[in-house]
Image: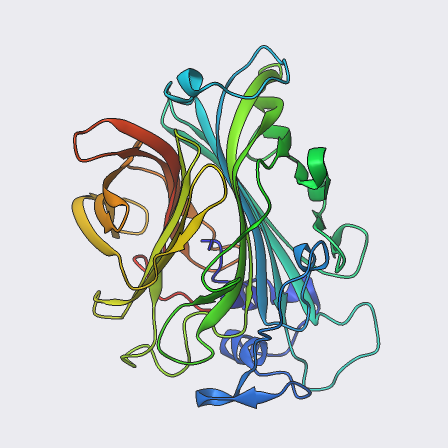
Length: 405
C-alpha cells in the first residue's frame, strides 16, 4: 500500500523536468487529479470507474495505464548468507535481520488539457523510491527518481511485471511449479547502496479483499485492485557504504495495487474521506502472512479497516472491518516535527499482536518526488505472551502533513 503511494504532488514538485512549464504547483496537481475525459465516471467528484473484472495472470501483474495511480512495492529483511540457494529455516528466521529494504515503483496517469501524440507528452509519470535500513547502526540509505514513462529508462510493461526506472528494475517470470519468480536490482551512488535479489513465491498470488477488490472507505470508488506475494524468499548481494558486496538471504513481501480514488473524493474534512493510513505486511514464522491496514480521517479517527490472513497452505480469511489498531508508544521526528506511533497493539480475529519498530527513526523524506515525508520501517511481531512470531514492514502516512493522493 505502499508511502508507497501519495504521488500527485510529486508531479508538481519537479514539473520542469517533465516538460510542464508555465503553470503553478496547484495547477499541476489539479491537472494530475483531473479525470480522464474518455473514462466512464460515477459517484462523487466524477471518479472514473475502477474495473471489477476478474483478475487474470500474468496480465494483471503488468501495468494498468488507464488508472490514475499504480505501484509495485517490495519490502524485506536481509540476513548474511553463505550464498547457497536453500530456503531459510525457521530457526534462521528467528534471528534478528541485519538490514531491511524497500523498492517501490509508482506510475501516475496525468491528463493533459490538450492531448499530445508524442512520446514526449508527460501523460504517464514514473517515480521510484529505494531505502536500505541498517538495523545495527540505525541508519537509512534512501534515494528517489522521477521520469516520464515511454522511454527505455522509464517503462512499465502491460503484460507482466517488468518495471524499470533508470537502472532500478523489477521483473517477474514463471519460476518453479509456475509460481512467481522476481528479480530486482538497484544501485544508488547518492545513497551509497546496491542490492540485487532473486525471490521465489511459495504459493500463487494472494488476492486481497474480495478477489482482489480492496475497499478503502465507504465511497463506492474508494477502493483498489490489490495483489500481494507474501513470504517471498531468496538470495542476492548487498553493498553498503562502499564495502564489498556481501551475500544475503532475503524474506520479502510484494504488493501490486492500482486505483482511481484511493483516499476518496471531497475535501479532507469530509467524514468519508481518508487523509492517511497505517499499513502492515507481516511474514510470520509459521509460514502464514497477514496484511492489515486502517484508513484515518483528518481528526485521527479510524475511517476503515481491512486486511487478509493466509496460512502456510494458501487458506485465507478476509479481515475487513474486524481490526482494531491501538498505538502504544510514539516517536517525534526532528525533521518533520511529526509524531508517529512506533509500537502498536493490533487486535484481529487471528489474535492480538504487538508490532514494534526495530528502531524509531525510520522516517523517509520523499519531498523531491512525492512531495511529503512518511514513516516506513522494519517491525517485529510479538504474540500476547511476548514471543516473537514474525517480521514485517509498517508504513504510516498522513502524520507529516496532507497526503496528496
